[in-house]
Length: 66
Image 1 (cartoon, rainbow, N blue to C red):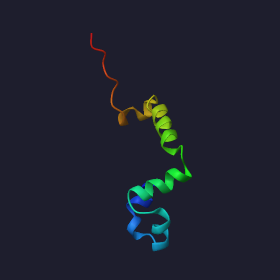
Image 2 (image 1 turned 30 degrees about the horizontal axis):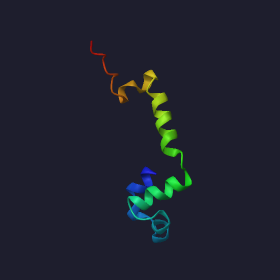
Image 3 (image 1 turned 90 degrees about the vertical axis):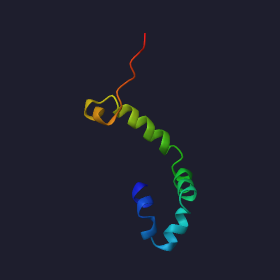
């Protein structure tokens, strides 16, 4: 998805037409074909947040104020 968005203007006109105009048509294209992609990605990234290897990419947990 990211690559198609960043190189949208390099795509052939028929592909641009199929994807729709940026940003609304583009989002509609992918959400109509992959309706759970956003939530699945969120869940996967949440799972990764508990893996030590990925800790540098996440903010530290908030400290409880007492």
